[in-house]
Length: 121
Image (cartoon, helix red, strand yellow):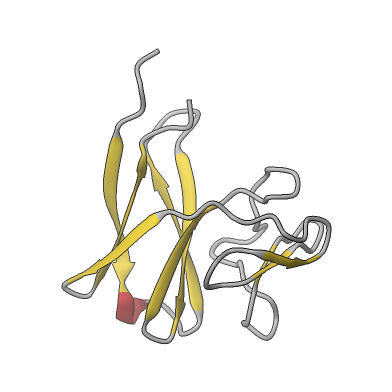
């Protein structure tokens, strides 16, 4: 199998994302696309792979829903692992000290652009 290519994808415009808010993205097609999400907090944008550090499945059950009720942290909807928005570190729940996998993110002319592999395998 060939090595995954690194691809840039525009997720959305900054002003189209709630503050704080999240938006899912997908890079690649087929059975194993790379799945992630971006989080806006103020003027900052963070991006992570949609992969819980506890058991490795997606963090959300509902589209674009990654934040706690008070919107101050990222939360896994399965087992309640709670992560910092700014560094992805788990601060509560079943995997304290582990962290979400960061994804390269940039703002270009008001658009949120992420860079990741075009597939997982």
